[in-house]
Image (cartoon, rainbow, N blue to C red; front, side, top):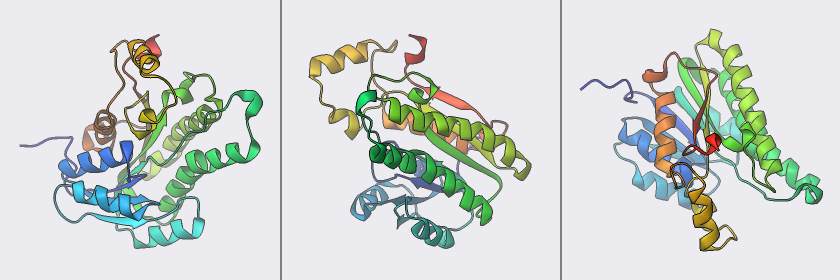
Length: 248
């Protein structure tokens, strides 16, 4: 049966594929017929993800995206890429008076600079051809819905959102689409390690119109839409997946 959401015949590169949304995206892409190339820093966790994928022809490349030489080497090993999922990132919580320059620069390098340069280098090396799609995994915090202590992370994602729109306009002439998924709170190892009580966590979930946090695969399904031919006329968008939190 024909489906515009199918990823059959597409090679998809997923960064940060060793856990969370990246792992879920890789698994769901494989279910949709894609050949998935995984990348992250931890080889053992990448092997775990690889073992979860359906179908054949998948692979992984261990790479620290902060290291330019490592990224260039990875790109040289890639086949033609039809979809890039720029997912790798992390968060540091600190109130404004306690922001440290070195921590902020680390966040910027991982969350903003690394994915921007990866797309730039892949386009320059002509690894991404006409008809390909890049999806940045961003956050509703980058749209102004940031919690207290989350200003550094929010600013890195705000920059990603701005780059998404600007690069989408520039790369349209090459037939490359660029979009962002702006996720709300998602049940991952990050939320399970938060230093709050169970009661506080449940109260926060209740503040969402849909009364729960998201699941990694629910974000992955939105990413698949943007990678697929179903979104062939979609570029420069910020797709909000947040259980209605922005409505509050």
